[in-house]
Each structure stands twice: as structure tokens, then as C-alpha cells.
Length: 263
Image 1 (cartoon, rainbow, N blue to C red):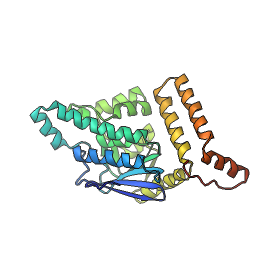
Image 2: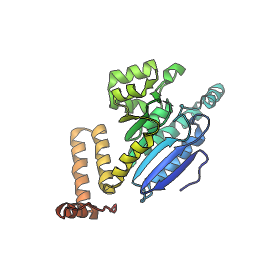
Image 3: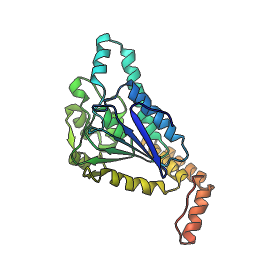
């Protein structure tokens, strides 16, 4: 695993926990974006890792992009620098979304702008009852450029997504839950334990099957019906000849818990 300035990565029992710590509020800048990209690529390619969690060591999950950095870019009118930064965030989030392993955002504090986009790139989101989420870029005369627009529309539909982004208001944890942006609202004390309970359950599943199911679910969102059905049948064919599939079938017949190896 690479060495980081603003991240720590702990791996235990096939579960990787990525913890951000760029004081005071985990504002996203070029360095943090690069570290997230490197960490996600490392975890994607680590055969020992079956589930990835991302959270914060600070009281804030991610406050959004580093506004001071962005103001400096606008003063120099270096559009290329701004677009390069946005592409870095997009790339990190795309790696996370396409990760062949379940990903869980553990939102322990306020999550605004790019922080919400980062959380939306995960498969599952758990939020502390005192935390908030939102895409307030409209209040800066900007838009969510790191992939959040596509994800929010898929999650809540066009009208609700438009209202959320055009008003730019922060959502309480309960409002985020009612919209379907998060799976569960937890107390601060129970947040990590609740997310870890899901992570542990997912880590026990057959890794190759998990990866194929994620690929087919993504295809169902992005392709037409026939292309999605083709993805399903190709995935089933790939899984059927794995040792994990043989283990799963034998365990079922023998009335025991399967022990999956990831191949």
C-alpha cells in the first residue's frame, strides 16, 4: 500500500478502511484527489481486500472542494488547471463506483459538494444523525462536476435532483434518508459498527460473484435491456466455472457455511 499524507488505510479481515484527515475540514484539493485515486487503485487490485469503507478522522466528512484553491485558479483564469482538478475528482470517483468490490461511505460529519459526490460514488451510505449532505455549488455559480449530477438523477429522479441542486440547500440526515440518498441514519456511537456489520457480511460472500453482480447492476443502469441481459448471461457463465461456485453448491447440499476463496 502506498504512503499517504492525508489518508490512512487499514486492512483487516478482508475489509479496507480509508480514513481522510486533511484538517480542518477535508477540503478536496489536488493532493487529496491524487491520494484518493492511488488508494482506490491499490485497493481495487489487492486480492486480499473484499470490501472498502471510506470515512473521516475529523468532525466533517468532506466540506467540499478547497475554495481558497479554486479562488486562486479563477484569479489566474487558468481554465486548464480547473478542468484538470475536476477530472482528477471524476477519475477517483469513477474508480470507486466501478470498484469490483462493495464500497461503503461512513458519513460521520457534514458532507457538502465534492464530499457528497464522493459518497454517492459508493454502493452504500450510512450517515450520522447530526450530519448533513448537499450539493451547494449553485451558490458559488458552479455545478457539481465530479460525477454527482448523473448519480443524483439516477438515485432520486430528475425533478428532485434538479430541486436539490438548483436550491443548493443542505439536507439533514433524515431528509437524505427519505430521498433515498443513504441506507441508514445512525447515532455517532453506532455509525461505524453499523457500517462494519454490513461490510463483514459482504466480505463473506464469493468475491468473483460480487464483482460480476456489481458489473451487471452498473450495466442495468447504463445500457439498454438487451445489452444488460447479455451482461447477465456472460457473468453467469463466468461464475459457473469458478471454484467458488462449486464450493457454494457443495456447501448448500452439505448444509454447511461455504468458504469462498475468490477464484
